[in-house]
Image (cartoon, rainbow, N blue to C red):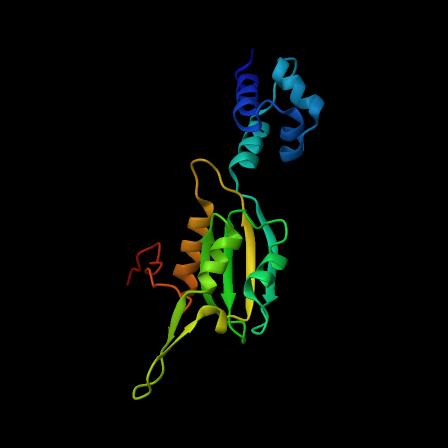
Amino acid sequence: MEERCVVAKYLLSQYFKDDIDEMADVTGYSKSAISDWIDGSVVPNHQTITFILNSIFTPEFTVINEFYEIYPGSPILTQLKKMYRGHESRSGIYAFYDSMANLVYIGKASNLLKETYSALNREFEINFPAGIKNKSVLRHQVVRYISAYDVKLFESFDYPKHVESLILRVSKPIMNKQIGILDKAYSESV
Protein backbone atom coordinates (compact mmCIF):
# COMPACT_ATOMS: atom_id res chain seq x y z
CA MET A 1 0.00 0.00 0.00
CA GLU A 2 1.30 3.47 -0.91
CA GLU A 3 2.68 5.53 2.03
CA ARG A 4 0.13 8.34 1.59
CA CYS A 5 -2.72 5.79 1.75
CA VAL A 6 -1.26 4.53 5.03
CA VAL A 7 -1.10 8.13 6.32
CA ALA A 8 -4.73 8.76 5.27
CA LYS A 9 -5.81 5.56 7.03
CA TYR A 10 -3.86 6.57 10.16
CA LEU A 11 -5.44 10.05 10.20
CA LEU A 12 -8.91 8.53 9.81
CA SER A 13 -8.26 6.14 12.68
CA GLN A 14 -6.55 8.55 15.10
CA TYR A 15 -8.46 11.78 14.55
CA PHE A 16 -11.84 10.70 13.22
CA LYS A 17 -12.30 7.39 15.12
CA ASP A 18 -12.63 5.53 11.79
CA ASP A 19 -15.72 7.60 10.94
CA ILE A 20 -15.53 8.38 7.21
CA ASP A 21 -18.62 10.61 7.45
CA GLU A 22 -16.91 12.83 10.04
CA MET A 23 -13.68 13.02 8.01
CA ALA A 24 -15.69 13.97 4.93
CA ASP A 25 -17.56 16.64 6.90
CA VAL A 26 -14.40 18.20 8.38
CA THR A 27 -12.25 18.07 5.24
CA GLY A 28 -14.83 18.53 2.49
CA TYR A 29 -13.64 15.46 0.58
CA SER A 30 -16.25 12.96 -0.59
CA LYS A 31 -16.82 9.73 1.32
CA SER A 32 -16.05 7.73 -1.82
CA ALA A 33 -12.68 9.49 -2.29
CA ILE A 34 -11.75 8.81 1.34
CA SER A 35 -12.81 5.15 0.99
CA ASP A 36 -10.64 4.83 -2.12
CA TRP A 37 -7.61 6.21 -0.21
CA ILE A 38 -8.22 3.86 2.71
CA ASP A 39 -8.50 0.71 0.60
CA GLY A 40 -5.48 1.79 -1.49
CA SER A 41 -7.24 1.89 -4.87
CA VAL A 42 -6.41 5.61 -5.22
CA VAL A 43 -3.37 7.40 -3.79
CA PRO A 44 -4.07 10.84 -2.31
CA ASN A 45 -1.61 13.48 -3.49
CA HIS A 46 0.74 15.32 -1.13
CA GLN A 47 -1.42 18.48 -1.07
CA THR A 48 -4.44 16.40 -0.05
CA ILE A 49 -2.63 14.95 2.96
CA THR A 50 -1.36 18.43 3.89
CA PHE A 51 -4.90 19.83 3.66
CA ILE A 52 -6.30 17.03 5.85
CA LEU A 53 -3.59 17.72 8.45
CA ASN A 54 -4.41 21.43 8.39
CA SER A 55 -8.11 20.61 8.78
CA ILE A 56 -7.28 18.52 11.84
CA PHE A 57 -4.84 20.87 13.58
CA THR A 58 -6.06 24.35 12.66
CA PRO A 59 -8.36 25.66 15.37
CA GLU A 60 -11.97 26.29 14.54
CA PHE A 61 -13.16 29.66 15.80
CA THR A 62 -16.88 30.19 16.00
CA VAL A 63 -18.31 33.58 16.89
CA ILE A 64 -20.83 33.07 19.67
CA ASN A 65 -21.67 36.73 20.15
CA GLU A 66 -19.95 40.02 19.52
CA PHE A 67 -20.75 43.07 21.62
CA TYR A 68 -23.60 41.37 23.46
CA GLU A 69 -25.09 44.08 25.66
CA ILE A 70 -25.18 43.47 29.42
CA TYR A 71 -27.91 45.30 31.33
CA PRO A 72 -26.87 46.38 34.86
CA GLY A 73 -30.33 45.86 36.40
CA SER A 74 -30.80 42.28 35.18
CA PRO A 75 -29.28 39.15 36.75
CA ILE A 76 -25.87 38.50 35.16
CA LEU A 77 -26.14 34.70 35.07
CA THR A 78 -29.48 34.84 33.22
CA GLN A 79 -28.00 37.17 30.61
CA LEU A 80 -24.92 34.97 30.17
CA LYS A 81 -27.05 31.82 29.73
CA LYS A 82 -29.01 33.58 27.00
CA MET A 83 -25.80 34.81 25.33
CA TYR A 84 -24.05 31.40 25.42
CA ARG A 85 -27.06 29.30 24.44
CA GLY A 86 -25.59 26.05 23.09
CA HIS A 87 -21.99 26.97 23.95
CA GLU A 88 -22.13 27.14 27.76
CA SER A 89 -19.65 24.35 28.49
CA ARG A 90 -17.38 24.91 25.48
CA SER A 91 -13.83 26.25 25.58
CA GLY A 92 -13.06 29.65 24.15
CA ILE A 93 -12.12 33.28 24.51
CA TYR A 94 -14.26 36.08 25.94
CA ALA A 95 -13.75 39.84 26.02
CA PHE A 96 -15.31 42.52 28.21
CA TYR A 97 -15.92 46.07 27.01
CA ASP A 98 -16.98 49.20 28.86
CA SER A 99 -19.83 51.51 27.80
CA MET A 100 -17.56 53.19 25.22
CA ALA A 101 -16.69 49.77 23.69
CA ASN A 102 -13.11 49.91 25.01
CA LEU A 103 -11.61 46.47 25.63
CA VAL A 104 -11.16 46.18 29.40
CA TYR A 105 -10.59 42.45 29.93
CA ILE A 106 -9.79 39.34 27.90
CA GLY A 107 -9.96 35.79 29.20
CA LYS A 108 -9.77 32.18 28.12
CA ALA A 109 -12.10 29.51 29.41
CA SER A 110 -12.46 25.76 29.38
CA ASN A 111 -16.12 26.34 30.34
CA LEU A 112 -17.31 29.67 28.94
CA LEU A 113 -20.39 30.16 31.13
CA LYS A 114 -18.78 29.33 34.48
CA GLU A 115 -15.55 31.20 33.88
CA THR A 116 -17.17 34.30 32.37
CA TYR A 117 -19.58 34.48 35.31
CA SER A 118 -16.70 34.08 37.75
CA ALA A 119 -14.64 36.78 36.00
CA LEU A 120 -17.56 39.21 36.04
CA ASN A 121 -17.97 38.81 39.79
CA ARG A 122 -14.33 39.58 40.68
CA GLU A 123 -13.40 42.90 42.20
CA PHE A 124 -11.63 45.54 40.17
CA GLU A 125 -10.07 48.66 41.63
CA ILE A 126 -10.76 51.87 39.76
CA ASN A 127 -7.75 54.19 40.00
CA PHE A 128 -8.62 57.84 40.42
CA PRO A 129 -6.21 60.80 40.22
CA ALA A 130 -3.99 61.52 43.23
CA GLY A 131 -5.90 62.82 46.23
CA ILE A 132 -9.08 60.87 45.47
CA LYS A 133 -9.54 57.49 47.15
CA ASN A 134 -9.57 54.52 44.76
CA LYS A 135 -12.75 52.48 44.70
CA SER A 136 -13.28 48.73 44.29
CA VAL A 137 -16.21 47.60 42.18
CA LEU A 138 -17.30 44.28 40.73
CA ARG A 139 -16.36 43.91 37.09
CA HIS A 140 -19.97 43.48 35.99
CA GLN A 141 -20.61 47.03 37.20
CA VAL A 142 -18.12 48.33 34.61
CA VAL A 143 -18.71 45.85 31.77
CA ARG A 144 -21.38 46.79 29.24
CA TYR A 145 -20.63 44.46 26.31
CA ILE A 146 -19.22 40.94 25.99
CA SER A 147 -17.83 39.18 22.95
CA ALA A 148 -17.30 35.42 23.02
CA TYR A 149 -15.69 32.94 20.64
CA ASP A 150 -15.88 29.16 20.75
CA VAL A 151 -12.37 27.80 20.15
CA LYS A 152 -11.87 24.09 19.54
CA LEU A 153 -9.34 22.40 21.86
CA PHE A 154 -6.87 19.74 20.83
CA GLU A 155 -5.12 17.22 23.09
CA SER A 156 -1.69 18.79 22.71
CA PHE A 157 -2.52 22.40 21.85
CA ASP A 158 -4.14 25.08 23.98
CA TYR A 159 -5.19 27.58 21.32
CA PRO A 160 -7.40 29.63 23.65
CA LYS A 161 -4.36 30.27 25.88
CA HIS A 162 -2.20 31.37 22.94
CA VAL A 163 -4.90 33.60 21.47
CA GLU A 164 -5.51 35.21 24.87
CA SER A 165 -1.77 35.76 25.36
CA LEU A 166 -1.40 37.43 21.96
CA ILE A 167 -4.36 39.75 22.52
CA LEU A 168 -3.10 40.65 26.00
CA ARG A 169 0.33 41.60 24.70
CA VAL A 170 -1.09 43.69 21.88
CA SER A 171 -4.05 45.47 23.50
CA LYS A 172 -3.22 45.54 27.27
CA PRO A 173 -6.79 45.68 28.69
CA ILE A 174 -6.91 47.56 32.02
CA MET A 175 -8.49 44.73 34.03
CA ASN A 176 -5.85 42.15 33.03
CA LYS A 177 -2.43 41.81 34.59
CA GLN A 178 0.18 43.29 32.31
CA ILE A 179 2.32 40.40 31.07
CA GLY A 180 4.83 42.06 28.80
CA ILE A 181 5.18 43.43 25.33
CA LEU A 182 5.79 42.08 21.89
CA ASP A 183 9.33 43.00 20.93
CA LYS A 184 10.22 43.74 17.37
CA ALA A 185 11.07 40.58 15.50
CA TYR A 186 14.01 42.24 13.83
CA SER A 187 16.93 44.37 14.91
CA GLU A 188 17.09 47.93 13.73
CA SER A 189 20.26 48.86 11.93
CA VAL A 190 21.44 52.44 11.86
